Amino acid sequence: MSNKFGEIFSFTTFGESHGESIGCVIDGCPSLIEIDSADIQKYLNQRRPGQSKYTTQRQEKDEVKIISGVFDGKTTGTPIALIIQNTDQKSGDYSDIKDKYRPSHADYTYQQKYGIRDYRGGGRSSARETAMRVAAGAIARKIIEKENIKIFGYITRIGEKTINKNNIDFNEIHNNDFFTPDKDSVSIFQDYLSSIRKDGDSVGAEIEIIAKNVPVGLGEPIYDKIDSRIAAAIMGINAVKSVEIGLGSGAALKRGSEIADEIYNNNGRIEFASNYSGGVIGGITSGQDLVVRFTVKPTSSILQPRNTIDINGNNTKIITKGRHDPCVGIRAVPVGEAMIACVLADFILLNKSRK
Image (cartoon, rainbow, N blue to C red; front, side, top):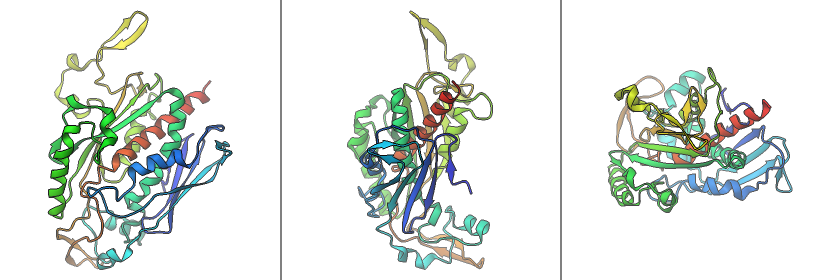
């Protein structure tokens, strides 16, 4: 049922939004990698809900517990099992809408596919599941850090408001509630989201991920291109509606002479004059920065009444009460970073297996 991601470095997640717990099992991680729960927790804390008034007020500590695969602080080469207990479920928030389908949510499609659905927060379709992707990504980072790869994710747009890309400073990303690298945009985002929340509405976002020091040669030429795997990884994140590599859709507006990433030899070092390709050429990494951009739609659960149908097909209206993100895209930043880390770790191990 497609709950597994990856080939060599792979993980399978389990659990529901309002179930007892969520978790994952990671396979293919090499032995003797130093790791403890704190290494994973620091990334989970970035995604954790309830940290500001601009995200859902569900209070989950997301405390991860390592069940297996680690001994004396090092991976053993066996499956690594991780679990997080759910502690702040308020399933009663959903009792009024259990027989109605929330527009743009997975309620209708899950019901039609399986004949049953968990209406408590969306069950398996909830973004709650992404906590385990972040946990798996924390272990993947241990693998890619050996190659000196560094990943930076940040918000570039929230609704109508955008950052000034001339002000990008990676050191600013974790100094605010929005993962923005432009400190001048913080107050703009604050005012904007406060207004959105007061309206009982939600808004979308755009996120950019940059991976630096990616080696040349990751990815396969035809059916397993690294950019196709990245696209699948990012599109698998809740509420994501588009993915771009490098210039992306902007390439349609250019001529070939404008966006050719010219190559030259600089005293024995091969360099590129530009990076419109986003670090991927022919499905294989070029050694340049890997640049990925994706958009997240507005949160489907809002306080404004919307038209829908009930489980019997009758027309009705719905208001989704409870605790929801006015912009779910904010907490998608660490999830996007994690999925890029998992893809890179998988391809690095695949390359090593060839030699």
